[in-house]
Image (cartoon, rainbow, N blue to C red; front, top):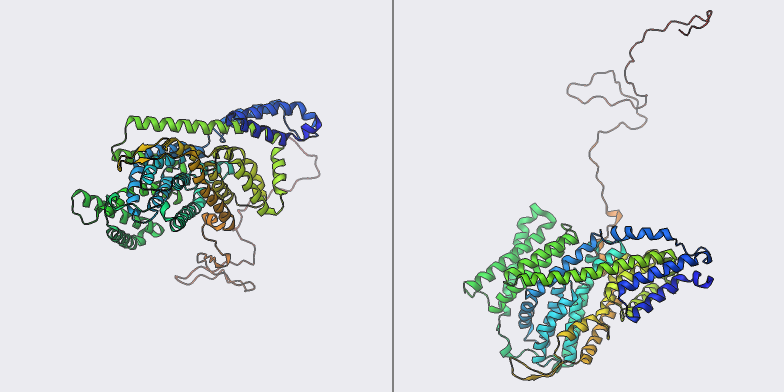
Length: 592
């Protein structure tokens, strides 16, 4: 009894892992585990030597936990349904299809062009939707048949699509970054700012891998044949259009700088983008043909999602809107874009609301279960056990980071990123804070690591999403009329392995170069360079100077004489009071 009571925390944590591995739903496993060990802890409390602090009245705290700021009244988590709704509406609006078609035509003439297009569009979708499932399914339906049609290696094509879809995990406005910020007690805006550069660096490493493979194995990713380039040539025209837009932006910046200061560069860029967008639409509608067909299509297709990215992320980074407000504006922008394409219908809104409700309910139930679990786990001093366990790892801060990342990487084989964020992160955060680790940097590092949970065979959700839309049987291609072989599950799994290795490399880069994340704090200010200026004040006579003659009248038009600070202040003569008569001490006192 005493052994169980004094080791309740590790036994409780191991029991939770067993529940999850058996296959019980996460939310119910958390809640059931918490309630079960609460009852056991109350019974064994007398045998614990003070290590268990549980009593029946403590259950009264659960309603406050559920309805307080941690769950039902949590303003931070309100951003999740907004971004989910925005991503699903954009996926239904056909934006991904237009982007893949246009960017694929742009990169088509080069070897591996379709793979570059998939990664580029994956990053754009990540910055607009923030939903992995929407990105992977959309690109799997649209780009996988095209890549197979033109002879791409099946493993490579599958890996590129799954990996580019998981960029929605780390590039803002990622849902997991919202959850991590909430669990770490930090600002979502700071988490977004810290994750932006690592997300872009990871995108660049993906493209570098495609470049290397295209050189080593050129037959694995051929260029698009000439007959497939329906938009023709016109890259020179596109470059000229971009240069003109840059010149207009610079001129607008110089014009707006005196009045708008630091915001003039953003406003100038907005003016240049709007002008070139209007010119491209007018050139296409009026058939002026001043721009090539390729340039027209690239400008018209790319600018709306870029504008939506600015509407969401730009307003958050500039401090104009909170993440919740940015998500709300993004949802409205997604509805406007879908309506402009003629694809906004009641059915689309119904599907988006149903999917948003399912995901939000999933997150809410996990969070409620996590509250029940943490109530008991903290009552048996589990947080102290975890903190001592992690801070005693050899190597100090570096050893802690290596051990934590190995733990999260292994658990990602079995747990979803939401489950990791709600179960593991609250246990790791106190130890990281005690070691002096910046929690924004720690959160971004965990976000990059949790990204692997979507790519791990055999339980990676991105692999499941791709498997659901990839061909399982041979089919006839509608363009070439050739029979296309199916994509096997083994090919999808093996295609993900190189990209999991790239994500592990990105974890190491984030640890080695923390400034990629720490830039969210802005430039470092040296105290020696601070120049404090005080307003002008009248000069005082130096100490030891004889007092000035205050009785002398000031010169005509001159300043009054300086006060004599060597004497006590004089507030003027007090009003005279009549002297009281002296008491007659020879007579007894009278009290009437």
